[in-house]
Length: 386
Ligand code: M6R
Image (cartoon, rainbow, N blue to C red; front, top):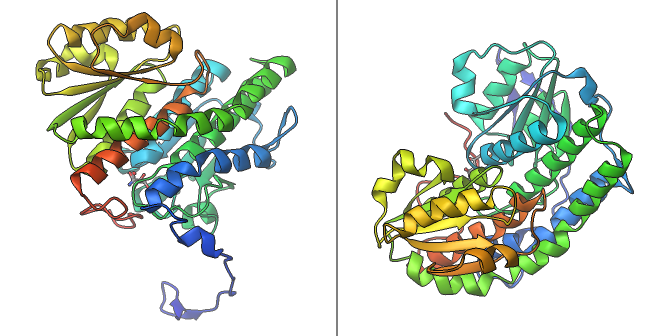
């Protein structure tokens, strides 16, 4: 391979060996890479926590003092964009830090006015997505710091950001993102906690409490993996559907959109993720007994609101799959088609846990339909063109 610059002059680049263990690129006994990558989540998220959290302290590269920033712009595409959307809820609620979230393809051409005291965070598994890279290039002329949240440490976004934060998911082969998403969420949760602490919104004790909650996540994820068989059983029902709706509120709204994206790309079934409260502003017209509606409702301060939206669907004969914890299922399972019981209740980091059944429902539905799980039609793992 020879490399040339813009003037067609040949340039030299140091050779760098990338150490990819054999285990990273085989299916490890699973039928598909995606099944393996879903199952790896407890261990890769533990790796993320070990990397960024030491005892009750968050350890990040220099230059990430959130007292200096007045606004964040989070940008990504597809699943990475939904990770940023979840993080918006965390940054705003925990740190009181205003946060804009956008898809890179819109951000890059919109010429958004950006505060010189703001930071820009590009989120990307591959670190090569053309739109996200272009958005980063726009932002670096307007903001005080750019951060690249990337899984591939040698990528263009890692190189071109002021600070690159690895998401440490390991190689993700399946085109549909799974572990990269939950690792992005975990790094973003750590950043939001750092922001809250730096800005004096939480003290040492509260930070330690939240970090303890985060450290519990790998164990809870391990329990969540047990839902695989139940999701497989439900996939027979889902695979008959032409349209599926996913509903969530608060930080579970972007997870609902991620669930819909997973189902679309893997099983080719039309699916939409909606904020539960938006249902009556249009999508409720779609509801009949043939449209499965998947409701994400942890038993928290928004539970009653989401359940009231769920009842509006049931009154129109919609068939509900309710995902909640024990308390939520006990309170609201009357008349629903099926339930999936999630661990824990009221935990701030529920979006990481709820990602798992989103992945399994899509995965098993794709297997039931016989689609190409690891390489869905028309899709590429890394979108390096517009
Ligand atoms: O490599 P990136 O994270 O920048 O990729 C962004 C999207 O192309 C990607 O998340 C896509 O939506 C996935 N196929 C979703 O599973």
